[in-house]
Length: 273
Image 1 (cartoon, one colour):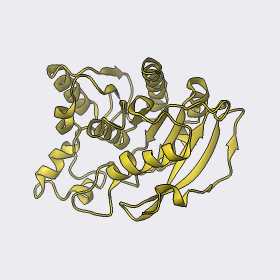
Image 2 (cartoon, rainbow, N blue to C red):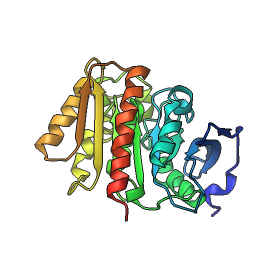
Image 3 (spheres, helix red, strand yellow):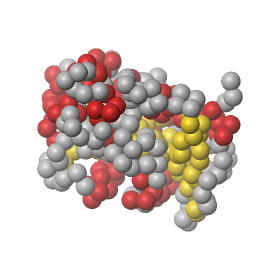
Image 4 (cartoon, rainbow, N blue to C red):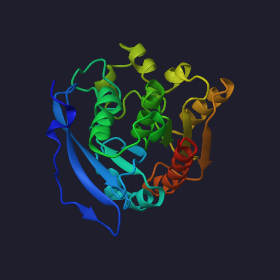
């Protein structure tokens, strides 16, 4: 079988903004049989001395793409340098929700992100090739995706975060193309339940996965985040939980990113060997 990295090439002009370097790459997904883009930010010190770096995967929300963070949150470039991380802007499709769809075999974003993309990045860049060197977070749909993937692949990711995450979408059966990915909720209720973050909690053992969850008090996802938080408390699952004034907005996420990057930088520092 051809390696995943075989169709890797530079798509856009490389940007150098004082320090951090931004490349847009193509990764071929064998599971979905298509090319998928990814944005890679490497810190200023990358390649100086051949040091391996931790990697943070960023998942966009509904209707976003691999360039969402570069286009709307340019501060991530500064964070790459500040914390010496490699940052990956993942493309999760218009409305994948980052699981392998049980009704659409062409949508296998769990396999792509957790297995294919991580393997490709590790084979191409100087990364820390262990769960101690990988974290994942996202906004909205991506917040759901980050927790969902990390809980299901704790051998791949050591830390996960969510910003305004749609962690239990069963209350929104007519929104965000979910019925296209899971089937109608009245016909396929098990599909909807089994692909929520709540359903994955039984996989968490011995506080192996570090987690930070953040949602604004006026966000339409606040109640499902509170429910997740309360359930995790009852199950004695260690996690950081933040509520602040704010809605489902870019302004809120720009603030939340600062907390998330600090949390993951601390995680990487604690797990350094």
